[in-house]
Figure (cartoon, rainbow, N blue to C red):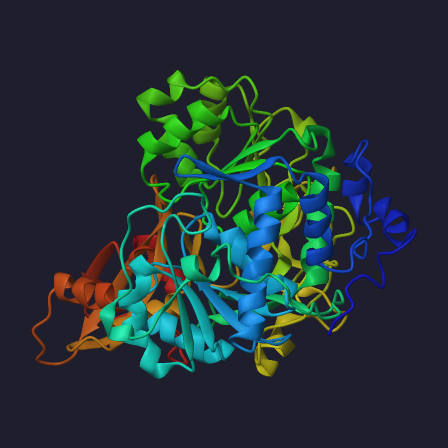
Length: 561
């Protein structure tokens, strides 16, 4: 594993600040470094909160609530079942596939308390995507929302899964709620409601945990077209939580925060910021299971009197344009955070006009737990940047030869810090390419640092496309589309889109003699890809632009997309 803090303890960061690390001079009252070992594990951090805030409300969902004491009790009961009945041991991988339900934090804490590794899964995945992730991670247990079990039924035969735990909308809440039942094709499914019954024991043997123990496998796209699992340790998440709290300390009121979580908890942004960071300071968290229902989300705003909200540009844009947003009293809103994709200035202006709160844009990746930089609360204006690197984080920009560029010049963003992953799960070749010789993670994004240390993203080396805050990798789309009968070859690129930030454009060359329509290709992709990965526009062309060695030139296609 890479010890990414060696050069950052003590005065190391301060010594470089006056030369090539200008952001520390812009910190004001923000401490330049944190202790990534302040807690031995995420379990220690969150157990402290469950004791300190035991009687406070921790989560609200579907009009019901759970206290910190409830989360403590129920997660211990879940851990007991996993250990005693299913034989879960430290290091075992357990998949969690559900939207923002009250069961999510209970299940996560139960898994973490046993030293097992949570594999976060998008509940909207197709069978193909799910089967790959389960097999790659070696998942033997999956905790799945009953509404997603039809997908699991299609994928489970190609996976190592041995036990399935089904989740209903009201599980972990005081009163049950109506909802879908597990797909009958799966056979025996253990209901989470039964595991969490009052008469179930809650005793379990807690293993010794260290910061190096894995906490999450957070899957992200790859150059092969298949996603890779970023190995995130307890120390990674403790560090990023401490970095976030140190950086945003002026906005945080322990025991007094009210967070509305519309971003999915299976996404590392909401998982680290909305859940772990704010749980650790005793926040009341309103979980939104369906963020597409903007009327329902606005009703949640009105009821909660929120102090914190985090979203992607598309969500902010939809809310800012909604006529009912003006019904909300935003007097208590102290922080609006934006990430996942670039925040558009017009969106930020509309949001501030209605709420009085500036969106503070940040930057990060699954591989960095995720936050690398964010605009400080004191900034007071829309900066067109992703802000300053967070404490104990070193950023350098390098050219094609690996040489560090001067301030104001573009270069690949390379990051080093205690929040950076140790590597990808069982991917030695990818790991070799992912880090520089001196241990910096290569993000594949091109940025510029100004004299104050603010980081602006200007381009991407990798061909990743961001659709509504989700990473889409062209190779995966092309691999699926090429399997469509009649497709000879194709290329996928992103094009600017007002609603989603970027939209997918697929250029297709037909096989000789094939009868193929654009809609045929779209329908084929829809059967194998999650909705946001389905190309918005397919264009059939005679040929694709290529280099002299036959490489498809996506950049030329972007110019006509």
